[in-house]
Image (cartoon, rainbow, N blue to C red; front, side, top):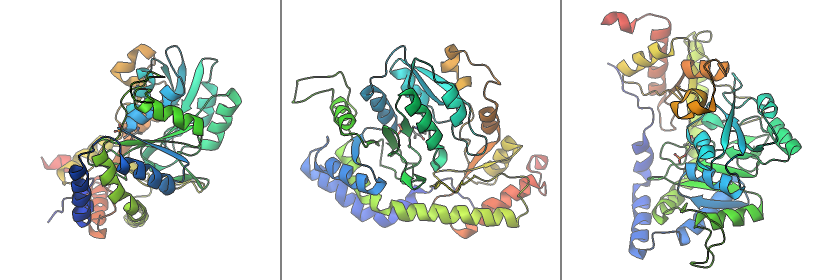
Length: 381
Ligand SMILES: *Cc1c(COP(=O)(O)O)cnc(C)c1O
């Protein structure tokens, strides 16, 4: 009777594009040019238009986009960078990788994004940048963040890894700060067939510097002006992304439609009080890379959904300030109560565009079963 629903069904997205993608991969194989080259250059142009940015630099991953942004801004040992404590590890990891200190702040409990007032208050004379994250696909509150950064004379790096195509006050995310960092990890809204990422900027000088650093600061060949690294994107990933990118808008539309249907289904199931659905402030869009709900007994709900064969994931179980690798930063449990609570209550449920209405109903019914205790899953064992 029960229907398995995966958290994400990449096969459903791949099937209609299979021939076109295989032809693109074959074209790269036949050329035997695997590093950079015409597909990477075309992808950069096409993504500028798609996202609405002036400069796009194709890179090896979203993590490397963050690292490259920090390196291009000259951020180094002894510097501080203010960021949220609640994100994927790469956001804070990149700061530490350049030798700087992540200065963590709490989230807004409604949006899951960095609290702008706390970010502003965390700025010191050593602060060299702020990294807001557009978590789950919805923009951080950029106006007060930009005002605080501009007031301190420091740049903002947008971690837009989960937010390609999303907007804040009609402006594309990734085009507001000095840099925007995107990821094409397969589970992102635009996924490659491996690791890939993108760095965006409106500033020609920063773009030139980032391009240089992407290939060991080298120009021309074997003359090195800066100490960069290898942050290049593979031609194979670029070729695959060029086939997929034109479909991003319709895939995102599918996620929107599913999010709207979830709202109707959760409401109809009488779950308004027990389940908090994602917020969507009127001044931003949400691309629903994840549809994250909040419930009091999250771990219980997770066990129940696991038993029912319904995909789900905890994003993220441990905020940065409680991660073992950041123990030397000296934060304590209780330092950021909103993030700690989000880490305990949040659960992502499937929202991918190809989901059917019946699958969504299955998910909502399973949540209702657990929350309303009609079938106490734990009592069955
Ligand atoms: C996915 C992600 C990254 C890292 O991207 P990779 O391509 O996996 O290196 C960085 N920040 C956030 C918020 C992410 O979700």
